[in-house]
Length: 78
Image 1: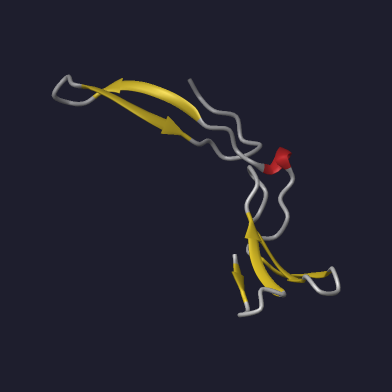
Image 2: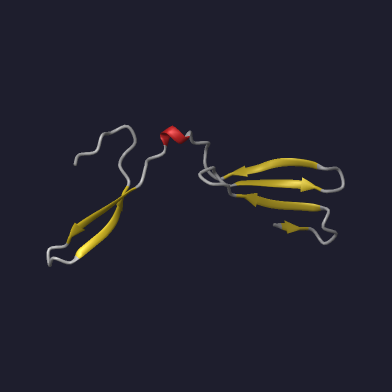
């Protein structure tokens, strides 16, 4: 959050879960607020890919742990 010297006008960014970060201007004297920046367009939760943990062995036999993010709406192969 940033403000002017009198702390009457604020600029702040809110980040919540999977939502896009949103930056707001707020005038404390008038209680008016205005959205001034949304970093990414709104995304529906159904458009987000899931993340799955996977385990596999490297060529030298050492175990590897990784995360797989499959493409949305495309079935994964097992």
